[in-house]
Length: 122
Length: 139
Image 1 (cartoon, rainbow over the protein chains, first blue to last red):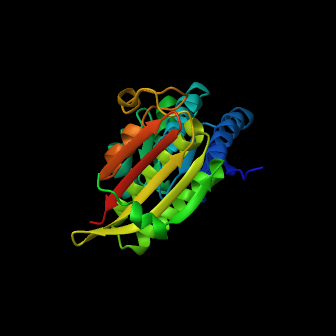
Image 2 (cartoon, chains in turn green, cyan):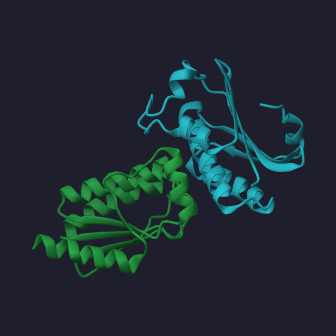
């Protein structure tokens, strides 16, 4: 059994802070957990903090993009925060543009962006 | 690509049989790259390429062995990594190296993306297995 990435609820936001070197099974579990938690908690926003990730490969990149699409369908916006510059450069060269994924420089800006988005929708 | 096979005599090795071994393999590559003083961007590209190739080896080759070593050539140093499996081989190599083409459920960026992230890239494939060799030179 592999570890799971914790999904924390703060108000109507779900916060995921990835602190470990992800193996593929954890990535798939996280996708399931997040979708379920969005529905269970009626969350309006999801923040995924990847500031501790030293690499984002195509598998993790696809999870981030798929998550953004799934959560949007379930009525929640996803913001990916904290991507390291070297990771961003590598992702683009790898050929992943993360289309449809909203990003912010850090957690604080991510929260601001979520608030602005939900105010716009209300 | 030049033959760096001799460097593998002193290589670090990780056997890959499941997805946590892929993590171990890329950590091995990262440690070597850090020790060689490679810049952070180069390290990140190399480790990302190793992650793609390690996963490919597991998913399509049924697992195998990853070997990594520090090499020097013409006054520069780099990291050499070889991924060797005994899987069925890659039927159409040109197609497999095409962006977006996948025989599985991936995004089709594994081989082509990894190739872009490193300086030297070389594949031997046949019915007896596949070996991918990459080199990333220091800054």
